[in-house]
Length: 379
Ligand code: GLY
Image (tube, rainbow, N blue to C red):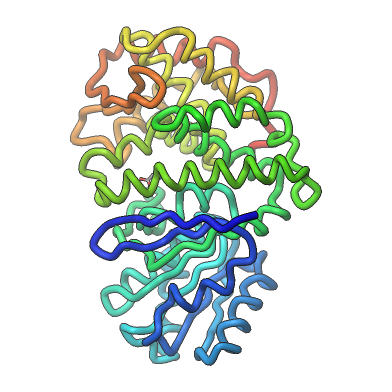
């Protein structure tokens, strides 16, 4: 498998490298004037994190590692404070660096710790999940959660580089892979129809992800999907790092999706909530006279073929509407949605009529799932 490099432009351009066994690229990304490196990884990735730390130590860096709680548990002010303590005790200076090894929660936390230590030190992300490769690790969003909500504290702090080592996906749970594919499908709908074609052609193999045993053709298509998704994200965040315009398109399906995540007390995987959110946005666009039935159907077909949910229970409208109004991405009281005029033609829909919103919800809740979507929930 060849190695692909995608450059993200901006004040300090950086590369996202996609391939296999990329550890050899890390030192160049960290930079020559760096003496100390802190590898941050969740407890479940102890062996991988330690391998990275040892490699760095072998190259002459003073290399430290910090083990974090798994998943969202790590995205707290307490865990960040512990990391600052480690950095302080090891005398990390402005020219030293952090390396994150993990999924989106780890890249968010490590990015936040790097953004805040001495007002900003370098961070290189080594994402280990599909979701983190195609979304969280690229684009410089960092953050932690508070008791009041997710990602309420954070900053934009682009990394010095991102290494998407596809070998990490060998051991990825198939439902984590499928949940990551929701963001890939999102990228297809907002910007790259070829992604939709590839996912549709290979949906059965992707849904039945066999990790290390997956056929070479499935690995090839996955590499292509990661590369295409990263290219879109790189182009968007290169133009609009701080989400003042174009970057909003990346939130396709997320306004309703975030509300579902909250209603489900974060027991649904993010990708599952975004999948339903995309169907809601598609129905909203159809009802607003923007989107053809065929493209709405294509949402349902593609997501269903991957095993992602396309409907949601019908008794939660007040909660969902309230959550959407409070979404941190809304401006004032005005509800904003990203919808499509067509595939790869995203537009903003501001302050839609409440009856339109309720009608879109009715379409999404017409055929609610028969039982609990166990494969895509976390509990
Ligand atoms: N995940 C959306 C963004 O990075 O803007």
